[in-house]
Image 1 (cartoon, rainbow, N blue to C red):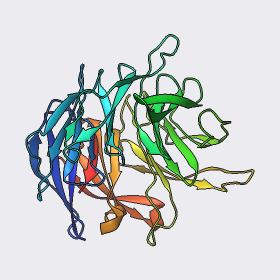
Image 2: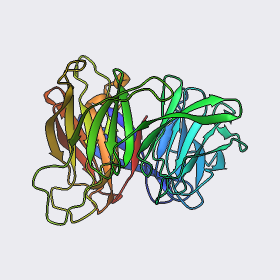
Image 3: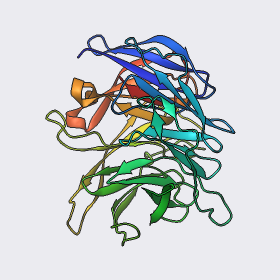
Length: 357
């Protein structure tokens, strides 16, 4: 496949549609579809890729659903539901037909059942409240479905909560502790290992997934993701983690994590660090830094690989939430050990999340 359609959310009143042409290395803004305010995080329905969910990251917050047409434009809003709290920074569709939305600034979230093939929300779905840590508040920042549970990293509580569905909805059944003050933000699971990116510590860790609800946790490695020789005044806050599925072209499951410099920025911009998980199951299991790739972006919050099914997984799109550097498409090279910028679009200065159609 040569041309790829990509949707991008942001802190604005629209979702942008881009067309990336791999043959000509061009990235073109196609349209802007009106939405509620601040559709910062967007997610496709896993079984109906013509259905999109978008947060409204406000106080109070909301979640909306939209149809997606053949050109990547959005329909008028199909449904809107309250997120149950403030600043919903993440939403994702689950295999159950439910949609999870997490409220960063109020320590709670909802996992909403849906009707009409996923386009309508159950307005009565309960709110899930997370325990309030001492001297701070809970900051749930993501939800990841795994093995019948929903895992929720809590940046304020230094915990990954384990949710299980039962009578009356989802409830906390256990937890996976994280280092105090580390601020777990986003997570990924691969090959029976839990990989966590910690915003406050700017670290990447790998742990076992202990038996539910509260089995013994082993941390095999925890490493800094900050690039060498940071500029004076730099303040790093790690943001995203991606582990694309291995394939013939990219057989090694490298780990891609985004640095986010919220302080004084350098012209080279933020980097995407590439790691390899090595020696799994042995005494020296660990994480090995492979590369730091600078993007020219300012505060990379979201990035996303294309789809394996159509060859889009060769490419990664990323954007910053500050500055004017727009969005970039990077191509995986050297078997995934490196990234090369192949296209940039400056029409919209900032974007915060992406999906490939």
